[in-house]
Length: 429
Image (cartoon, rainbow, N blue to C red):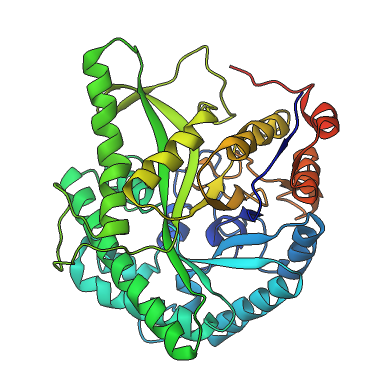
């Protein structure tokens, strides 16, 4: 198998989500949701990977893998458990985590919001109500006041389009709504929150004396294709699906360009509201009609049934770059492989896309560092480079984790590494 070199200057890292790995009783919408019958294996978020108690040893493990950057989230409900109360023990915990991270040579990328809301914010209507923007921006101010001296790279929202479609279009996330008008409202409100947060973070850190602030949003991206390539109806449905799911929100979040059916609720001016193009990518969708996707029997798939399609990563990057010419940050790119039988091959194929692209890619974060609580999949879906025994909490670096460590050290894949880690692996249909 051929080797390849990765672009100069790209930082290689990992990503995770607070709710998926921290564990503990935290009063969020997902804490309540995970203790219902909606989770595939009956797991709940209170166990997760126990990272809250093991943060320093987990960071030691991360450093041993040579990780250069870590895209992680802070839990809003830990920092602000009630509208008028700040938990400074939680703040200090995250400060210690950031200090520990930086002392190990790991550059933090702090995600402000990733799927979960404090229960008090959820019960106020969360992002369905423009009046709640003030509460979110207060939280943004708390984050910058508490961590602004330690963090220069920020993600306002991770996958806001997933949050909106999964929670408000009948796909199983809280609050379990099914109303396309509400999806439009939620995405419009979140886009406004992002624009105001982008400006606020820059303004606050500039007042602190910093000039290295980078702020963006991580949009969930995928490839869309007709199930039958010669079907005009399906091709049109695929294009409309792509537009509604990712192009429409991308224009609103990145440029303040609120095209129909998005709503420019605060009458934002068009401009540039990002310092990089953040994206999450994992799969391709074959469209039969709008809202109706199928998988093809012949295509390779992950253990949660998603098609493995490396070319889609290039397609996603180019789609965003056509909208706004900024550096590309891949902030979540991972695969569910419960036995770790093809993840090394998957990494080889995904990173080969970066080796040949002409786009300015500055960050790549594999998702996820640890196995954890995978939303509706519970503990049954393993994305981690590090295996977690959910009963004992024991960690073990998987073979794919060792391969990723070698990739980081070599700044690419040598022929010898490909022979050792990749050649014997294959995808399954």
